[in-house]
Image 1 (cartoon, rainbow, N blue to C red):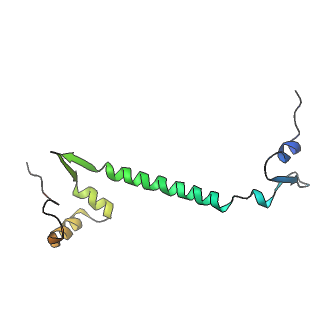
Image 2 (cartoon, helix red, strand yellow):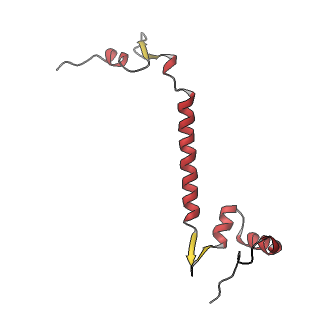
Image 3 (cartoon, one colour):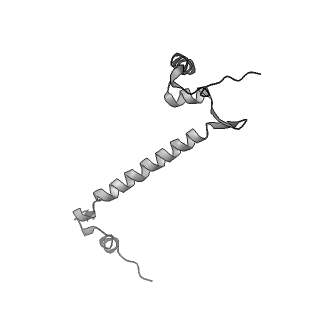
Length: 107
């Protein structure tokens, strides 16, 4: 079995037009990543981030006695405020929320 020279292998790569005197591959401009490919990669990354955030939120929704419930400290974390600040804001604007929006658990 014969081995191909490094020069020959480099020239067989897509986008490599020739080798420089130092042996480095010279890449043709058409081999540069195209904008639609970059946009697709960015779009895929953003979709992954959104799906991960959605999963985090879904994992914070609990089923308690047949009701879907989110605890105040989880909701405060989502809005990046302290729990007491969230509770104060809800109490101050209670008319804006449905009657069953908030309840307190006791024993």
